[in-house]
Length: 77
Image (cartoon, rainbow, N blue to C red; front, side):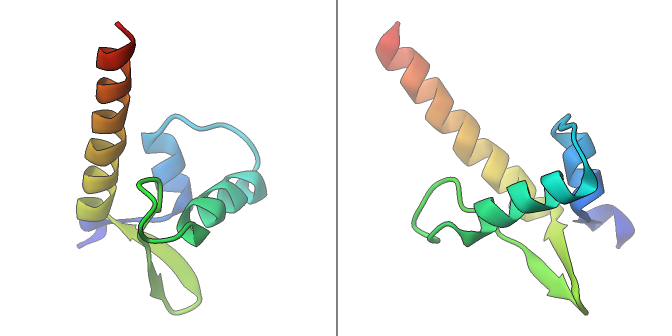
């Protein structure tokens, strides 16, 4: 089960983000606060008082964002 859920630090490592723990947490909070209809909205779950991310949600997010970038690059090329 630990491999299926990530915390802020693990997600930051996955995405190669640098910065303080607070800066990374604020960045993810901004993504979570976006409307659910926004493609950049980041889904999360709350376990106790901590925010966690399911790996299936992260993979879906990465596919959605990568697909958007591919479309943009294809149009510009």
